[in-house]
Amino acid sequence: MERTIFDMEHDMFRDSVRKFLQREVAPHVDRWHEQGIVDREVFRKAGEQGLCLMWADEKFGGLGLDDFRFEQILIEEIVNHGDPGFGLSLHSRLVGPYLGALGTPEQQSRFLPGCVSGETILGIAMSEPGTGSDVSGIRTRAEDMGDHYLLNGSKIYISNGINGDLFVVAARTVADQPHGLGLFLVERDMDGFTRGRNLKKMGLKAQDTAELFFDNVKVPKENVLGDPHKGFYYLMQFLAEERLIVATGCVAAAESALQTTIEYVKERHAFGQPIAAFQNTRFKLADMRTRIDVAQTFVDRLVMDHNAGKLSAEVAAEAKVFCSELEGWVTDECLQLHGGAGYMDEYRISRLYANARVSRIYAGSSEIMREIIARAMGLDPRQAHRG
Image 1 (tube, rainbow, N blue to C red):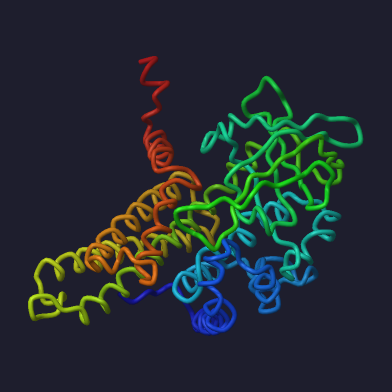
Image 2 (image 1 turned 90 degrees about the vertical axis):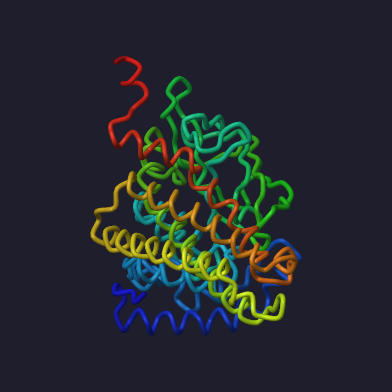
């Protein structure tokens, strides 16, 4: 299906991104999988290519491109010609905008140039051992000590956790208020800030994921993002884009799984004929093609809505739950069509399948997404109970 949201400049950008990934990322993917982390150098090379924080102002070294279509292209090409374990969109569009929207001029001047160049790698620390999608349950605490905050607690499952140089850390600032959170910029070399081992995962094996520990970390007031009591609302503000980013990657992965499977079933024979000749195979692939086209149309529309400032949290949740579950279904069906070969790591479908499982969990689980959608429909359980 022809996609109509891209102009010639987007096509040219896609071509340049593809060449960069084929040159600087693809040759290293197997090694990154083995070592469980990408080379830091690839962030710097992405920065040289202008791919980090593309939205940042030119005075910080950015391109001043706030058109989300460029990030959408980058996400799609990383799936097709790189590896989703390369956390570039996490760096640029999940964490970077906190500095762009909430950072003071001093904070932006201090941190953004390094983020744009790829020398300062970003991460965000929300999840804790006892909390996942429930941000209001955060226990890490930040105590106001006058000229600084004293940060204590721990975070878990933090992407870019080993490579990261600067983390946006959510911590409780008001003990008796579920929404009483602040956001703090924690730098790599701060005393009391340590990280655990690089956690082994089912998928996304090239992405470093770690626990972070804060033991009486002195965070200067100059490293507080925005109002130290409004962190919960800031987090909610950025979740719509985060879920659109996930949805974009999910559709791209589903498309990649479909294409690699089409190639496989044309070449693989069973009972004297290509697997593609069986009606079961053709019908399954036809269903995949149809649903992926529907999902892609939906996501493309939301990208344009986001560019216009009209993307709501509820509709972003619809995209996230629909596309992540589509990715899971497609990769499962495609692996089945590969037979035993699909279970082998040397086949692309094996990695796509393993990577897909987390999509229904991170950035808000499918259950949480459905709760958000239902409440937007007026189906709030608290109101129903009172009724």
